[in-house]
Length: 148
Image (cartoon, rainbow, N blue to C red):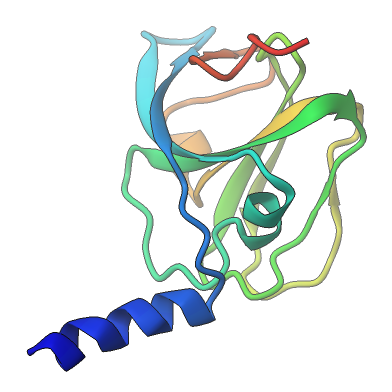
């Protein structure tokens, strides 16, 4: 029994092994009531590099928030990412300044932020349409908008 439990842990380590904390993130939409997501936090370089790579599923109201620690141009890609994703690029205050929908799994095509941002929120493909998200919406959480 112990060996059976140990093997899945090794498999998790083999695909990156980073541990992500979680927090609620509220999106205040211009068109509709606010919606809250449960997001994992990619705060370190190692966590940002791993991101959602190799994940087989993501919950309907879940995502991953990448905090780059500064405002700058950001370039994302989908290498080793199994799931199609929507990406929301956020300025330091949490305002959605750019959206890229339906990023293609395993693609090495660069997805630019278009302008300098501090955060990227990745959610399952179709979430932007399902929740009626748009540029100008505001994200807020313990992390978003709290840094220098």
